[in-house]
Length: 125
Image (tube, rainbow, N blue to C red; front, side, top):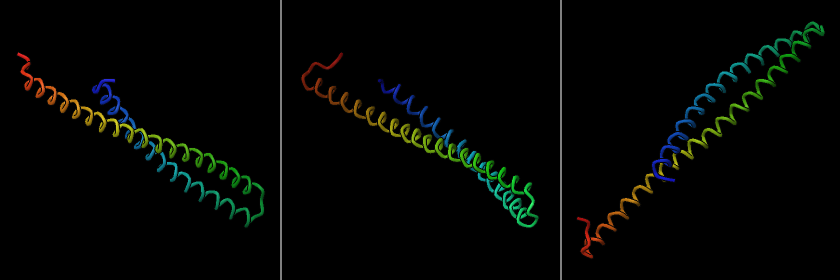
């Protein structure tokens, strides 16, 4: 793999990872707000059931529990996506650092090769 390819792939991984991290963080915040609203709704339905002992309030509370479970699963998926995106961004950063180190080593080797050629007297003309 050439240094240019390594740099481009690493840069793409870094940018993609950072973009997914931002999107996943935004999704997590929205889902947490929705979960808080559903928790309030569930508590209100539970309080209504305790006060009236009517089954419809219990059914509403169970529906709120089901919706909260679905939101919790979506929030867990968003957190997983964010973690994987962080790993992708870190891999992109490591790839960029490795490409920079390889470029530096190639420059140093080329400089040494040039100096050795000059010492031997067969410098390029």
